[in-house]
Image (cartoon, each protein chain N blue to C red):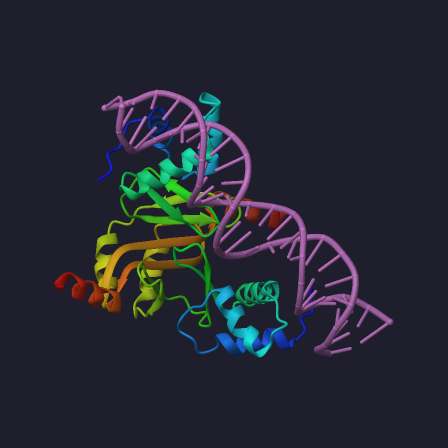
Length: 135
Length: 135
DNA sequence: GTCCCTGCAAATCCTTTGCACTCCT
DNA sequence: AGGAGTGCAAAGGATTTGCAGGGAC
């Protein structure tokens, strides 16, 4: 069994991701971390984000663009991806568990994870589109 | 406006994907197509699959491995991805539309697409695991 | 004949990895 | 001291793209 150590880099990554709702990619986080710690490397950011995700402290998301996004909230919930501005939003569904159980009954096998992703235009981009149409 | 032409390659891709339930990747399809048509190129396969998906004739899936899988059935439905054997299975949920409408009410914005992915062990792999445990 | 589509190979993008060195414990 | 973790750069895998020639209409 592997014995984990605390490192400054890992703590910084935790700290920078904590309380965020913008679901940054590894690269975005890396660029931000570089400001405080110019020596930090992209490989380290990837390694730690994956490690934290594997241990269930955070979650890794595939929303539909090619990149992996990271969410400090490890609880399963729905995500919305905007086709235009590429933002990723949380959607909290009170009956998520119910839905999962409904699904489970349809599958012979073992479900470890259920991912629901919505795609479209976020409120902001939708408004902009309407404004552009009016012009 | 672009005027599409019918090509032998596009027709072969349609033909090879039709009626399949194994959700092949571009590369898998390419290897199969090469048998009949050794000159076909991977780029062409990618271009045509993406084109067919953009036009809504088929659908492109992100199931959780890094690759894009293709489904000849363009109708939205649930997919199950097996962690062990990497197979992708269809799950047909009769109340899928209901679920979608439930979700829509939670989102301010416009939903173009709703994707539900399950991940775990398929029936076959689950059985194998049990057998291995018994030994 | 036009110009969309192909084959080919190189390029690109995101992510992972090997290695020597660092620094927690 | 031991070995997990880091920085760096190179490798890797999937997908896209530029371009010259080919074929559908």
